[in-house]
Image (cartoon, rainbow, N blue to C red; front, side, top):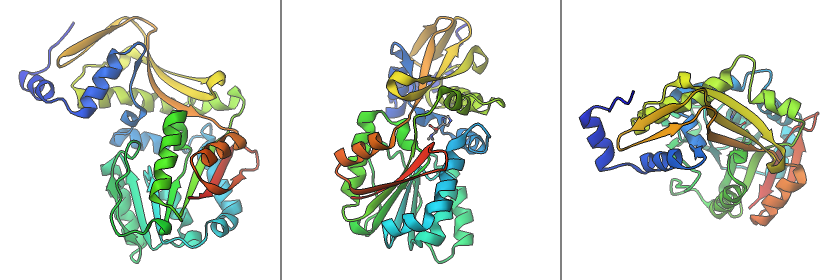
Length: 319
Ligand code: AVI
């Protein structure tokens, strides 16, 4: 049954749709439907992602921590002195914090689309590091990167951990790397990259036994409901994660468990049973393929370190 939203809600959403509402509406009407993975990260989504990083199946976070633990001194040597550390997708800021003792930045600039979540992390950091200058920015940096003035480019180290670069299409990843380079010429980039590995390892990492990743993916529908005024019922959908080896990426989808009609102010769509909404890609790279991407985006002096199983790598490069 189609229940229209309250008139004032329709008015607010229809007369002046925000860019986010237009993006969502267009993605939902596409064939196949898609929603940008940034909509995974409302406050609950960010908390669910933090929980995912503690799952036994989700290896990237532990592999990355192992690399910093085993090779931190080497990595710090390769980077050289750091004045300002700009943390892209900082989340709870814990990854950057682990590097403070070896990199010793004077200024920390965490950037995250989930501004509320970032604020609470920064409150905690300010207590622990009273001498560290912190400038927190709530921003979707995937299309544009606006930084506070007064930090010379050559003093900037961009920190992009966790293989978040893999959530971008190859074209967007290349553009993003170029954009970062444009902001730190003479400075550097430290980026975490997930490796290609057997499906038996990859798929459980994105479809865990506790169903936390399923909750993370399904929560996107609630976020879409609140941004677009849509009426998705989470119970109508199920989480699907699969490794597409031809494209070297994990794909996450939400699959309709039955025929459903979803409405939002000014629009609606019917989904057949089994029809999917594509919600995320997570690209996996071989070390040479990522080194090639960095070189094509203009970086030099590229070095990388991997964990003991060779599952994950940290790349350091000069801009
Ligand atoms: C944030 N990003 C690197 C995660 C990944 O592994 O692609 C997002 C994620 N999706 C499902 N689990 C984790």
